[in-house]
Every structure is written in structure tokens, then in C-alpha cells.
Amino acid sequence: MLFISSKIGEQLNASSQSLRLIVLTVKLRRTFAPAKKKHMKRIKEYKKLFGVEKEIDLTILKKTYRNLVKEWHPDKFQEGDALKVEAELQSRRIIDGYHFLVSIAPETHEANLASYTETINVAGIADYHHKGMLLEITFVDGNTYEYFGVTPQVYQKMINSDKINRFAKRAIYPNYTYRKSKKSLEEA
Image 1 (spheres, rainbow, N blue to C red):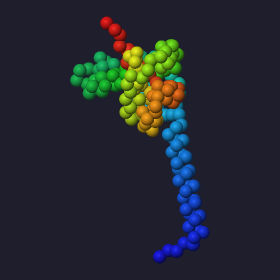
Image 2 (cartoon, helix red, strand yellow):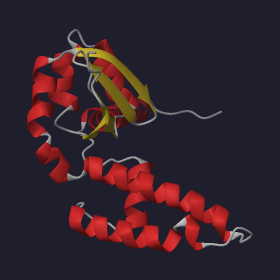
Image 3 (tube, helix red, strand yellow):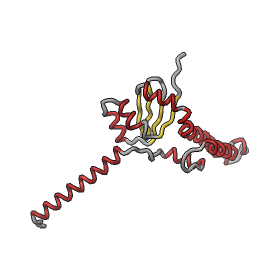
Image 4 (tube, rainbow, N blue to C red):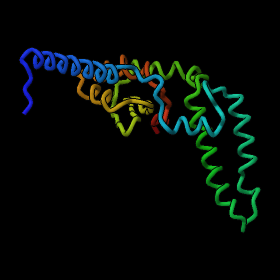
């Protein structure tokens, strides 16, 4: 049986409380810290495929895209060749990656800034879905945007907030990488 004096017991109790406080503080910082640097695996994979290290430059991306398409075009391989199937898959991956990286490029964001600003300021949120680290928001005007790196904790805070639009304007729109995922629904 182990006996601990009352002073040592009080010190251990006080130190465990301070340790709990430190752990709680770290958890809170992780929860509320903006995730600007957090990106999904898909972004990193496509950047690696195109050799992009930091910011996306559309002219370099376009040249790399053309070279990769020339290298992996399915018509380049014979019908019985084992690489033909791989070339078809790689070709689809290259095309998807190119369109994806173009949609999150800073130049694309600048070109579409006016319509994006109007959408987030005027149109309210009609629907939203969260899966993994991806938050998809559909606005009342029909535009749909994807936000990358949104943690489940931030999503929980959003759905528990009184005003979802206000929370999104303060915590999601300025802090996460986004792209327009679907065209707006046009009236016939």
C-alpha cells in the first residue's frame, strides 16, 4: 500500500489540474485556429502530379498539362499494349487534376471575385454538406462552392451557431481554399 502525504497529494492534484488546463487550451487552439495551410489530400496529389510546389501559375500549369497529355494520350499506345489501359486512367487523372487546379488558382479567384463576393454577401446558404475535410455550400442563387480543410469541429460550430451565414462569413469564407463546384441553375 502506498501512502502519500497530504501536501504531496495536493501538489499532484494541482499539477494534474494545470496539465488538464494546458491540454484543453491546446485543443481549443486547434479547434478555432484558421486552417489556411490545411489542404485536402487531393490538392496535394494533383500539385505533385503537375510539379507545382507553392502557388499555382496558370501558364506553367498549362504547359505541364499539355506535355503530360502528350505523354499519356491513349491513342499513342497500341490496342494490345498493357500500357493502354493505364494511359486511359492516367489521362483522365491528368484532365481532372488540371481542371481542379485551375479552379483553385489565384488567377481564377481574381477573375471570379465579383460574382463570388456577390454570392456570399447577397445570397444566403440554402444547403450544406460536410464530408471528411470538405464542406460543400449551396447558396440560394444556385451557386455551389467547395471549401477545403474544414475540420469537423469547425463544421459543428457552424451548424450549432444561431446564424449560419454570419458564422460562415467570419470563419469559413476568408480562411479556407475554395472553388466553384457547380454552375448556378439557370431558369428556362
